[in-house]
Amino acid sequence: KHLRGDQSKMLSEEGNEYALSALQFEEQRRVIYNGAVIGIFSSIEQIFYSFCFGAKREKNVDYEYTAMKGLGIGRAEKYLKEVLDLVVPSNPETRRLYDVVRIVRNAVVHADGVIADESQWDKLQDYIKNYPHDLELEDGSHIVRVTPMFLVSTLKLHSLICEEIQKY
Image 1 (cartoon, one colour):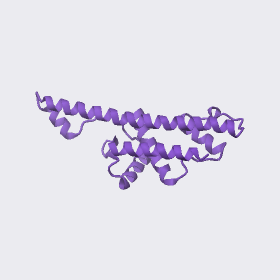
Image 2 (cartoon, rainbow, N blue to C red):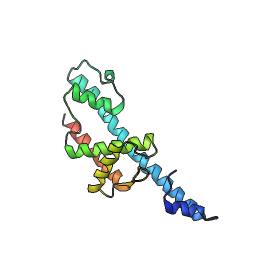
Image 3 (spheres, rainbow, N blue to C red):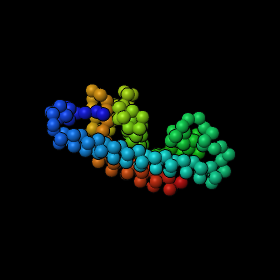
Image 4 (cartoon, rainbow, N blue to C red):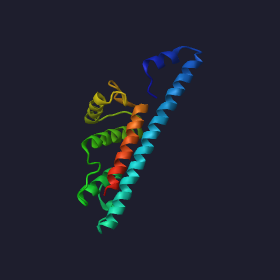
């Protein structure tokens, strides 16, 4: 859907079968990388939900997390903070990565990789100052592209959250 300048040029050359193959390769790569981020983040969401249900049982809390306002992982986070006085992830660097992964996940799921919110775009730009190989950002169109290094970071986030939740 989003073509870089060199891809557009290759497509404009009539009869260039390689250009179509390169474009197909790029699209497959985008789908695989985005799908991996979505899958890993979905697993993180399930961990949060399970933790909420388990904490309710173990701590004899009468209030279900599903009774809270909101949706998805945000509701689970709110439950952990308001009912159980927990913030996960609690480590500031892990929290920063979590916020970035959540922004990217939401962008690829809901907006084909476009970041419309300026504050979220600023967070991503700030993030790539320290991790320049994790994401590709297109300033003009505010499109974020996932790289293989970001998949590694997303898997690391999953592991860090699992380790933290196991402590409780």
